[in-house]
Image (cartoon, rainbow, N blue to C red; front, side, top):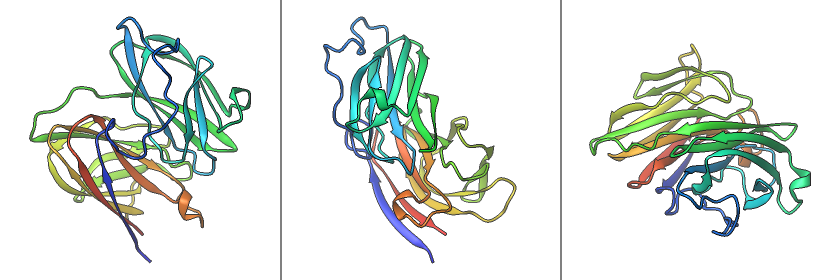
Length: 243
C-alpha cells in the first residue's frame, strides 16, 4: 500500500526540519573568534538511536537531537576538532561516535551520525556554498540508509546519479528550477523503492539525505528523503510517496 506524506521545508536558519537547541554560546572555545571560520551542521541519521547530544572539543554544542533532525550551521575555527555523539543526557563519556575531523577555513560541512546503533559511523561531507543563478538549482543526494543497496536516482525518469553507495554523497547537479519527481531505485534496476515530488526554487542549493531503513515495521525508522537547503534561499515543498 502506498503512503503519502507532505512536508514543507524552509531554508536552514529559518525553520527547515526542526532546529536544535543547546547551541554553544559565543564564549565557548569551539566557536570562531578570529574570522578563520568554517561552518558545520549535524544530521542525526541513525534510525534506531535515541535522541543525542553533540560535543565539539568537550563542549556540548547541540542537545536532544532526534533522528532526522538537521542542525543550523555552527561557526568553528578551521583546524582539528574532536566530534562526539552521545545519548542525550548521558555525557560525553557515553559517546557512541568519537571522531577527529580537520576543517578548512571558509568551507561548509555536514557531519552525519549514521549507520545503526550497533555500528554507528560518522560521515563528513563538504557542502556547496556558491548560490546558482536565479533560474537554476543545485541538487545532490547523500546515501545514509544503512540497509539500502547502492542506488540510482532519477528526476522525471532521467538518471541523475548512478551507483551511489551508503555513506557517500553525489556531486551536485545543476538543474532548471521547477518541479520534479525524484525516484530512488536499486542500482541497475528499473523499479523505484520510493518517489518524491520535489519543487526546487531558483537560486537554491539542496542536499537530499536518504535516511531510515527499507526493512522495518517501525514507521518512525522507515526510509525517507530529507531535502535540506545548504545555501539559505526560498522555501521548497515536497510530497513523498513510498512504495
